[in-house]
Image 1 (cartoon, rainbow, N blue to C red):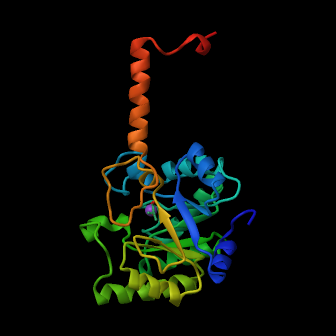
Image 2 (image 1 turned 180 degrees about the vertical axis):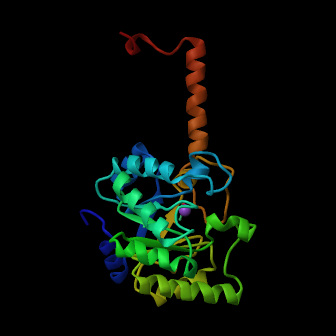
Length: 265
Ligand code: KIV
Ligand code: NA
């Protein structure tokens, strides 16, 4: 595929090709992720945690999301860029949701938006889709509702919540969403959902029966060593490697070893 579009992803599902998605929040990282051939880059509101150090995703603003998204878009050639609508930018009414989505599309150059929730945000999703803006859904553990849930534990373990999730997934497909994220739900339920819809279901902590996977970039490269959920596979230990590099540099500066003869004019 030359350039990934929302249509490409639906095709991938049809062909049984799994979708690889990672987050990114800045130009330099986005260049690397795009260059590695990752299909979808999510400018997640996890930027609130990872980039800004907030405890939750709630504080990040629409302006801040647009800044991150515009930086990412300048770094990519091939990946599809999906941008999270932050908390407070779409829940109060569908018109505001559309205005927020339009700002993201115009000011960042992103290709699609993602928002959390099912039935509760139905009218907002319809409005955004009507304006020609592709929407990715997000069900299961929806971190913008952390104060309702109380914990970041696995969702939809009980029948009632699982039934709602299944009907929300069908609704997202029916409305015209091009894909959805399923976060931290039992693998069996996630597989059932993925088999019940024709649009791709991208999992995080949702097992192997879905159509693709997403991880937070900084978690999967091990920059953050305090976050250890079961679903996280670490591909690098960047925390250790960077710490070593910084300590080595400090030593070299203190000892006068840096810069050497070749490293000066
Ligand atoms: O903000 C984010 O990084 C996300 C993913 C975890 C799906 O929404
Ligand atoms: Na998010």
